[in-house]
Image 1 (cartoon, one colour):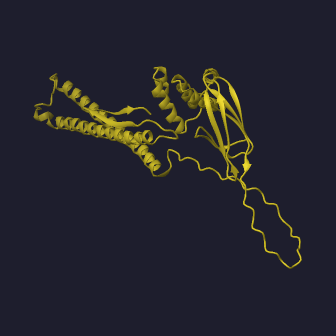
Image 2: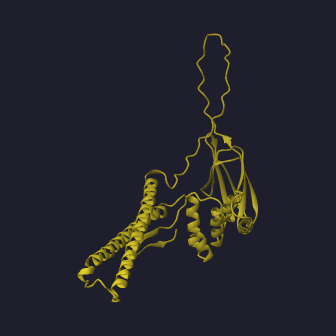
Image 3: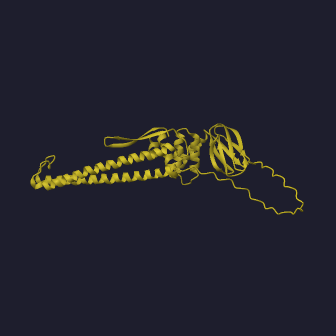
Length: 321
């Protein structure tokens, strides 16, 4: 779906399809293609971050595709700035302009930002916050050095004087406390909403399978009825459009069987239509759950509604995600 939208130049639909596929666990070149779609939409920071992370996987794409991704990354880098971050302690929460960039940052790393003034802040339990404001230019890298300072501790109250002779005590050095791990953000299939999405995907697959089976049976019933009508015409030398409209007593039983096959065809077709419509409604609700809640990013609302016209069914999307 993403490749088809990309080939047709529909970059917004391609970006949505690649992003959803990436978040649902698709590996390989999907993240790179998402970054290329972001680049086409001029979202250079997101594009640089996505393609950069993708190219770290040596199995992402063919050699020709990786050359295209590398050229896309260089094009995105020319439009953004790069921050080379140096932390004195690992495991910090790193934010840029209030936006979380890393919940467990290592001592060295880099990220991409829009050109302009940015405030980088690092937070670690047991230390004062480290912060630095820098000016970033397009296509250039800026070094950011953040050093943590331990929080001041209150001096203990003086112990009361004792008349006993002081005896030296051995003290044991304590290991510094490890920083608390930051909770991971909920995934798309966590909690009650995740269970409902899994159930929706399963129900959609079941309904589509039922629709395919019923549609196949309808075709078989119709084909059998047509074969019997053709055989009856050959035997009676009757070429009328509906030979069983007024059957003779000799052919009454065979015409009754033909009518039964046509009736079974109609019932199977109606059942297949019902399955397909049901699958469309459940799929619309499931996709709407993904689009409404969002996955790790904020989007404008998207309205999803099933559309049924005559014997056709579909899903309507309205908005920007």
